[in-house]
Image 1 (tube, rainbow, N blue to C red):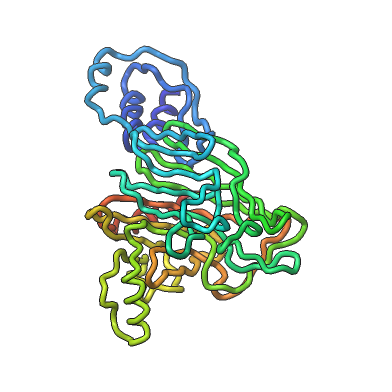
Image 2 (cartoon, one colour; image 1 turned 90 degrees about the vertical axis):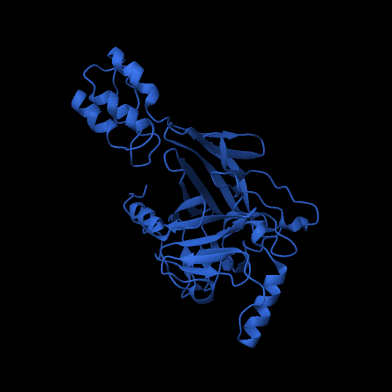
Length: 374
């Protein structure tokens, strides 16, 4: 049993796991937890059960000098679900429709994540941006162009009749090394539900990485046909500090003249292939990073798709003058979400202070590729 515990405890390498590894290798065991969370990201999995046993007195004096593990926790209220790590905000999921003053009520929507914060508390996303594109909401998933039972549907530029909404909370997860939630959403057209969708969102205690999974299924016996189109699906709207009307105007003028914008861009985009807004649109990278200053300090947010995603690597839409991008599988050809089939999308999200470190992002992406999909 001691050999098994040693193997379980040494499977991870940071924070609380270092303490557990030390305990497992000490001659006498003390306060061995009865549940150990598995590396494979299943927060419900149990490796081994072990009884409480006494420890050598020396370990009691050694424990305070070992690094304390970060604390990650998920809590909910009537309106939102919030995840914090080490007492600091990580993300908020919106359960209710709340339209800010000055925004057309038709853009009311729930079932999205905003804000997402860096470890220092700087907000990386925007919601209901003005004066245009108020249909974009932090981290969101919406198909732009499709057909359902002979009618055109547009969940991206949503209205009261055709929208995506939060339906219910399925589970709040607080499992030590991982905290998060499972929720159910609905894609609605008129009086009919077109798709049922389940989100699983988990934040890792040791790294702060956000793992996102969407599972979409037909809500009726009718398929959803997603026609060929150049944007939609998994999207991120960047920080309000990165929206600059003067830059938008300058970029449009530069495009007409063939020159460069006269106003510096408030944020930039970088792909795994080293491409930017200028040459990266509709390429198929392994990740996209959006970066720029907030309150005078550089920050970055990166979306890394899992290789199990449909048509991976998918095309990306990198908007030329606004802070948003998306991963979209319909740039070259259409497809259908059929009854009885599940359309699954997985992403790892890295929200960080400072300028992006390309080599570090490559390492994170390589490690994520090895994560077995569930």
